[in-house]
Image 1 (cartoon, rainbow, N blue to C red):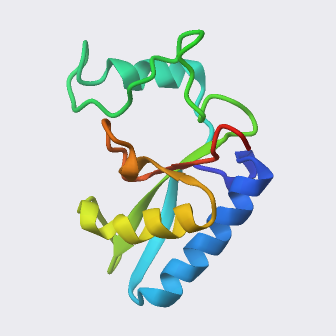
Image 2 (cartoon, rainbow, N blue to C red):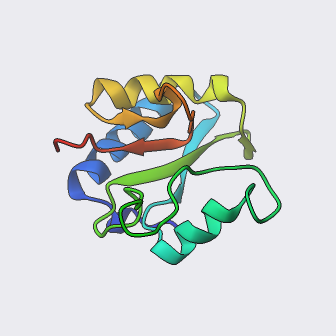
Length: 129
């Protein structure tokens, strides 16, 4: 279960404002946290997905020393979410674009705008933060 209390306080504050602004502008839609902190072991399991285990590749970071995700620290510097429309999760990337824009306007990094590996449901603090 994703707990916002595990997020860096600045990230948690920005997420709360992004979600409120998004929901006000998109009636019938909601944003739900799916991951905040993730142990390095969980990261390693996700990294195996699509490589040595069945499934689609969902991360580029292995969870090994030197390859930790911003999810792998406490407080977490990243969070994942999903867009819910009419009570159902949508993975349509066009639904994530408005969230990316809101996040970037608040100084966060949106995984959906990364140049190579698009991670639409991922937001994180910038490295300098």
